[in-house]
Image 1 (tube, one colour):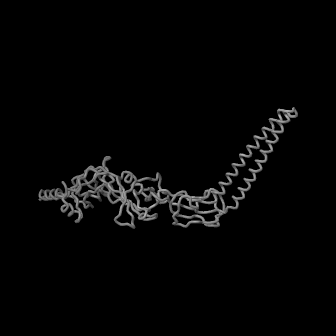
Image 2: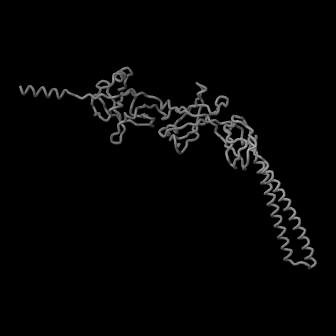
Image 3: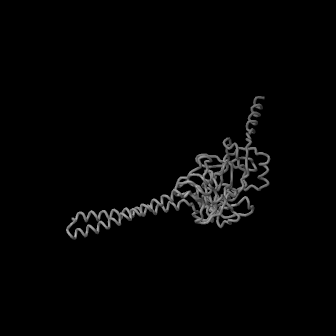
Length: 359
């Protein structure tokens, strides 16, 4: 009786095998990271924030937001009275300096005549020459001051530095502004870009992208080729994202207007086909990245070494190590052992058989 009982217990112990339930996914192959899309806004390549080169009170505003302007067109005008008075004062200084030069020349001629008759000394002649040089220098200074005042009077009119459209006005008539204060913003005609924000996990993806496509929300089905022109070296203090500028090749100004909502599609990042897996599926053992692959016939798991590409949010690209179609464990990976049987969800278990898993 004891022998029979011992044999039964040994048979039950040998026949028991733990089957662990896990979450899984069937690895599917895609070209790079197709579908990476960033929303942004259509902006001008060049945008000027214009201001007066002198201080004063704004007398007139000559444009509105959205006005198309040409190079040299007046935008705002300051009250000219103050600068006009400075021009008059500078002109008077020039006249006074001319009188001093004329008087110094007459004194020099008289001194030369007296020296010829021995009624003046050589020292007096040198002193008169020095006085004439000083008067001429003062005249040059007065002329320069007059030209400066004339320029300042011209600075009371703010003009456009290029053809474009007014996008913002920061001052109104009657307001006193300082020299250099930005009062009008003009977006230049011509090149158009899309301003987007990039999370830090996607920087390499954007730099390595072989092609960029720009689409406008207002024109579905229409795309333009884009090129990465600028990528900020630091993040925004609020959003913690990197600002990027995507230049649009051959933009149509009638279709792509400033401020339109646009999106940038990044495709074929890795340059080869890749498999996208959740980060939870990756096992790091002995410095190697591995995944648990489920045998569809025996439901046993085995580790397989993989080569990873760039991370994308909660996923990562697998560029080598998988053929596509394998069933990969995505949850419970740290509780498994090689050769252990697992239990898959009903939907996941049926997927390999219908998709034709490569052995």
